[in-house]
Length: 198
Image (tube, rainbow, N blue to C red; front, side):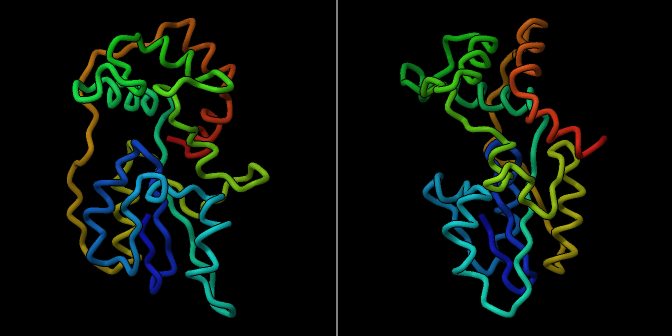
């Protein structure tokens, strides 16, 4: 999470959406940064409102606007699945190395997912307590150039955004049946994506 106090903007870091690369490019322009531990770096809208907002926002001043990037739901889950299949965590409770993508998605859909599928939900990350969208500026991961252009305008600087924290390559495909189940059981994820258009 990066705070641009003068620019009145907070970049929330939704996991697996390219925000690590954005953070690296933007760090010299940020007034405050929470990069670790991961639970704090990936501060949700709700946590920001409950724990962080009052610290940065002073009475009588314009509120800081929130910004986030989200990814197409199947692609987002695929990135998590591939990231957790890396060799260095094989054999741990978080590893997906020995399960199929269908099984990963089925586990993620459970009310209480097993450790390897505990990755949260993008829709909850960017939502207020009442379920309404809690960010002022929401961008698509596959159109990161728009997010970069927006940020350049706010921080008044040219950004050189590379790639970082990229999930390992792995042939991943979701069966037609599991794709249909995912869309039926997690409609809020697809609704969030659909509101961003194409």
